[in-house]
Image 1 (cartoon, rainbow, N blue to C red):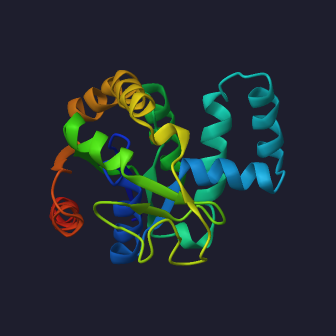
Image 2: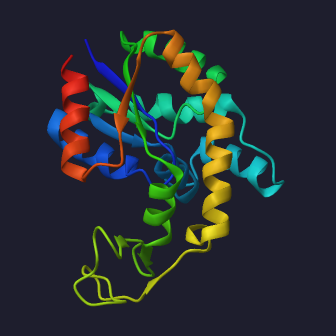
Length: 216
């Protein structure tokens, strides 16, 4: 039976980093909703074109379009063993749609690790984040600095700070995340699937705690 994990956590907690590490350790595909959208838009798939019609009008892409993108991705061979979902679902309604969809793959959401950290930790991490202009590689001045200040280790391009990594924006992003996601956290808590992980620890410690939670 395939294994499906929903990874939750606020911006700056290291969710994307942990999803990639977990994917390597478990052999499960990492499905990032952001990557999925970009891929569909770039390749101008039918779902990408449909999503674009809403985005150009400044409207939210309906749940059924997002769910269809996830379902399409899960039909690929690398998802045979299951997947780690990162950035989806975002609401209880999407969580219910996901459960229904996973029945088609003879699976269900097995575990929902929630990587948590205080606002001060998240603020420090996000405002120390620098992104390379060429490929979008991410560095952190405190936890993962580049070898040469201001230059990407991989392609030598300039590092810059994204607008959404500046303090005022970061505070707002964290607030919006908790406002939007608290019903989802409660949903999975009520279903006995939520496992809280201390995200203020080192990357290795967080990975160890995640693996321990998943092995249960």
